[in-house]
Length: 340
Ligand code: GCU
Image 1: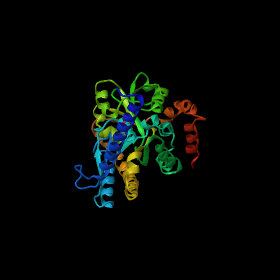
Image 2 (image 1 turned 45 degrees about the horizontal axis):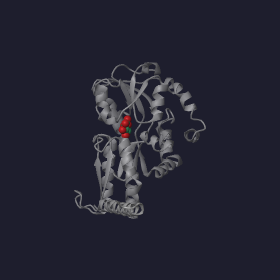
Image 3 (image 1 turned 90 degrees about the vertical axis):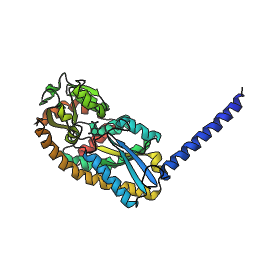
Image 4 (image 1 turned 90 degrees about the horizontal axis):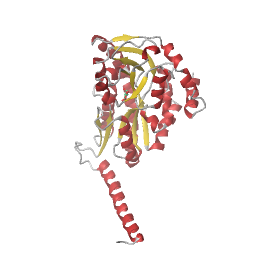
């Protein structure tokens, strides 16, 4: 048996080896160019939950193309769509551990890692789309992107995710009372749970990738999302009522692991940030076109699109929003509402 001090020494030595090989592996991962990368020296892996037809995925492909051009082929973005690398929460955790380079997630599940991100899930926070974008690209949006650093996550940009609305397998939601007794799938977000509860429904958190089956098998009676996601994940096949109550404008966000970011040469960091900003602008335009198109497409697939009176929903969530007064999120809400 080894004495205590000797076994401590040995443990320290082994830990040293593990750490140095870990760090070495990380460096090789970024500079080796030996991964089916077609010769790129740096390969960045990005996982997300959406389908390949989705405007967000198309804009990520556009970003990869920009990055390839700027770097003359030395940097490659490898995109893994459809939740292949795990749910949004799992991808965020992998970024924190340095096991995955990048992810595109809704800001909703980020709330469990960085509580201020609850802001974007607050129902009826924004007056309209322009107001929302004024916040995403303005001081508040930038402050929140920087906040990511506290959790080992660097925020690169926001992507449009439009407005979220309810859809069900059973009946139209024309007023909050119609949600009574319905199990509504929500994202992994306390704020989303409270919103559905305030409106009278039963919130049921579930990963996006499991939702189609969840709806089909009656584990939930409905869900809420933006029209392009309702369409691209084919939820319209099982949900024939879409009610455009537009209760929240929760954006998507592009994140990179801090450990990946800090291992990249400054020039690559610049290319990456520029490509992300350009992809965000590109996506915003694409979003508007796609949303209008899918609303027509789902109707030709037999979905009835309802336009309920939004104020009925907005009034009902007021007490929930009022409870946030004085909290960090409450202070951000005041700043958002104070914008012209
Ligand atoms: C939106 C968002 C996705 C998210 C999904 C969800 O579609 O863009 O990132 O996964 O909502 O409801 O989970």
